[in-house]
Structures are given as C-alpha cells and as structure tokens.
Image 1 (cartoon, rainbow, N blue to C red):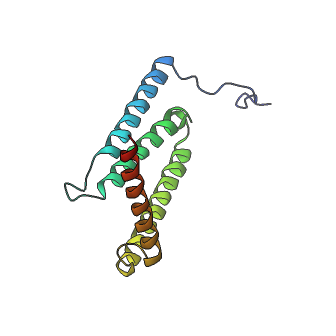
Image 2 (cartoon, one colour):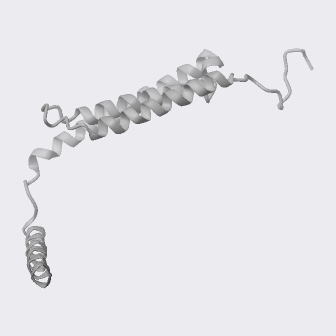
Amino acid sequence: MSSHETEHGAVGHIVPIKLLVITCIALLVLTAVTVWVAKLDFEMLRMGEMNILVAMGVATVKCVIVALIFMHLRWDRSFIGFVFVGSILFVGLFIGLALLDTKQYQPTMLPGNSPQIQLKLDVLKASAASDGDHGSATH
C-alpha cells in the first residue's frame, strides 16, 4: 500500500458546529421567506408569475446551501461541483421548458366551468342557501 491510499473508514472532513448552526438558521430564514412570499398577492401588482419565480429562486439558494455544507461539496474536488452545477442547470432547463409549454394550451381552454359542473355547483349553492334559511328559522 502506498502512503496516498486511505482506509475506507477514514473521516473526510469535519464541519464545525458554528457553521452548521449558521447553515440551519439560514435555511430556517429562507423557509420563512418562502412561506411569506407564498402569502403575498402578486396579482395586485399584475405580476402573477412572481410567486413561482421567487419560490424557485429561494429553493435554489437552499439547495446550494445544503449541497455545499451538508454534502461537503465546498471541500470536495472541483469536478464534483461542476457536475452538481450542470445538473442544476439541466433541471432549470427542464422546468423552464415545462413552463413554456403551459402557456401554449391556455388560449384554447374555455373560460369557466363545463355545463355539467356548473349545474352541480348551482345545485350545491341552492341547497346550502336553503339549509341556511331553515337553520336560522329553528333558532
């Protein structure tokens, strides 16, 4: 055995607790940002697509933090990081192509509900209204 070979049980890199705590806090803050952005109404600003863009951006940042710290890519060879970045770009490409495709079929969709669904909704509304009227009379 040469001196360059290592045992299979050898420990690679130990991450300091302080860095793990900072990473945990950053991930929690980014999760709170995701929840906060999900509750924002971008339709008011005529920017309805912003919810998904901001959520995907925050999710990407969280993914990079987890990969760098917990998967030890920060301390690994650069080729492994290159493969990781390439896979993230491919996922972004596939999601982008899927989002482009959703805009293709939307003009052909009919607005509103189908007649059968609308009939059932009207029946439900009428029964709820009649139940509400009878419930107030009994009190």
